[in-house]
Length: 134
Image (cartoon, rainbow, N blue to C red; front, side, top):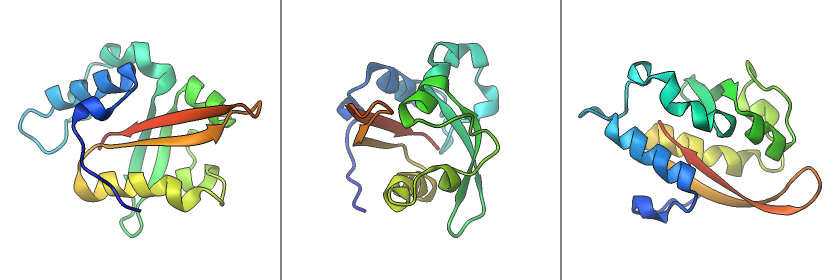
């Protein structure tokens, strides 16, 4: 899969643009923010839209879901996925394409932003925007 570098204003969703700016403000000269220093209240308003994953293993990396926001679960038709690996909950037909941006973010240490055309659980077409932050 090919990934292009883009400016932050390429992100269409206001919440995701805010989250990228938040991430950038917390870099403090490091390649990635120390998430332990981020106050949870700062992200509370976005909690339903967020997932937190731990990267385990290295080749290929696996992504253990620690938190899965309600609206993400609803849009993907998933239930509570905490404690499961991302490759276990993504349908096999979409798995490789879906995991590629996650692997890219791990490999480069840079955010990855994607837009996918999907159908919601009711079969309606939606554009699923995803911002992955290392």
